[in-house]
Length: 356
Image 1: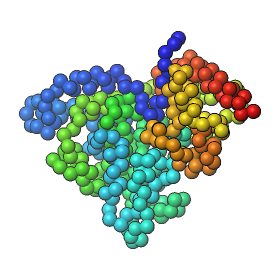
Image 2: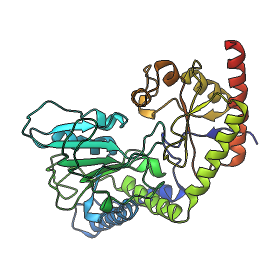
Image 3: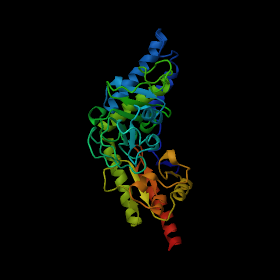
Image 4: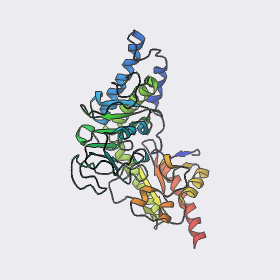
């Protein structure tokens, strides 16, 4: 029963066998999807099949899916918003949205509101506000543009872009078991965003550049598999294993703080705090013991800073610095989680003894 255990699915999910097979097959399709000959049409067919599969998972129309290199590139549409727009971003949003925070512009201009549907560090799910509603706590009175980051939520919790009220959404393939380096911007039909990337006019003129056919094919295959899992209720079982792990940790270390436990959360995410025991130290100790966990968002790994998300939730620096994230998936077994609990509780007991 030896071997490493991967418990960092929110950073990236393991590549699905279906996605790998689709990518390998796509590599043998020689044509450029913008070409009109048979080879080009074959490549185009792969892209359009994937567009349909991603749309089915996200709950939108295929024509609303614009393929990009990932969610971060897709979020750049915020930077190109209408002149005079202020951009308000929820304090717990991912950095790819927060980077475009822009306030204090033309008072007569409109407002863009961007927020994450599910937080990558804590798993906490946010309510999607109604576009045009008044009284947002972060200051926007009316949202003329509403963007949702659905990267962590899609495929794990019920969501449909069509009923979300959003104008835009960003999604990433590698969070659902697809390849890294491909994602999508979802644009409500009829909503004018202009050009995300100028050039040859690919992706309906919204994102130029020859499409990453193999990556997109893998994305589509991962989307099909993720939708089938969700419809089969697989994530209900994941949540039960997560809750069982937390019960074991709580029994062995009653002082552990479970961030967001009382709130609606993703079914696979536990954020644990032991004030005074640095998260980076825990990650290294667990790594040496054979377990991959994280001390926050993968995009912030290796950066010595207090989590902006946890600070926004009201935790002080000491508590926030102790946070670790355990994120699991359908392939994670109870035995693996039991082994992790044993290792983590042993290390926690040694920390407690030193701190006493």
